[in-house]
Length: 255
Image (cartoon, rainbow, N blue to C red; front, side):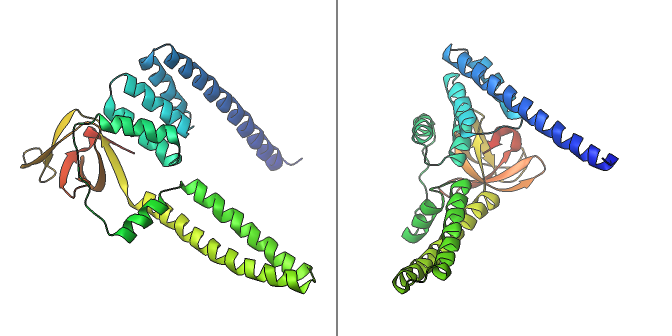
C-alpha cells in the first residue's frame, strides 16, 4: 500500500474513532446532567449541559433541558434563550412550546406586535411551522416519489395506469415546487434575520451606539427582538411593536 493511501486510511480510522469517543462522552454527560437536574442540582446541570454543547453536539433535547435548568435557577432570560434555540430545531414540539409560553408569561414587558396583512401572516406561520430539516425531508420524499412515478410511467404498459401516473406526476411536481419554495423561504428567514433575547434584568435602549446618547425606552429580561445591525460593541434592535434602539452586545444573547 502506498504511503499516501496509508495516511488517508489512518485519517479516516482516526476520525471514526474520535467521533465514536466524542459521541459516547456526550451521551454520558447528558445522563450525568439529567441526573443532576432530577436531584435539584441545577447549577451543576447547567455546567454539564454546556460541556455537551462544547463537544459540538446540539439538539432540541440539550437546549430544552438547559432552558429548564436556567428556569429553575430563576434566570428567565437564559431560559427563554434556550427554549427558543430548542424551538428553532423542533418548532412543533409541544413541551418546548408550552415551557416557552410559561417563561414568556413571567416577563415584565408586554409588547403588542404590529398587525400584519393576513396573507403575510399566513405565509410566516406556514414557513415557520416546520424546521429546515423537516422541509428538506419533505422535499427529498416528493423528489424520489416523482422519480418513481416517471419510472413507473415508462415501465408500465397499461394505458389506464399510465394516465393515472401522469396525473399524479404533475400533481407531485407542483407539490415539490411548493415544498422547495417553503424550504428556501425557511432557510432565507434563518439566514437573513437574527433574533436576540435580553439576559440583563433591565436596560435602556439608546438613540445611537453610544452610552452618552439619549434614552429611548426601557426593556426587561427575557424580551425577544430582531437584530437589525451591529456597530463596534453595539447592536441595533427592533421590537415586535416597531420600536428601534441600540443595545450593548453584552446585554443579550443571539438565538
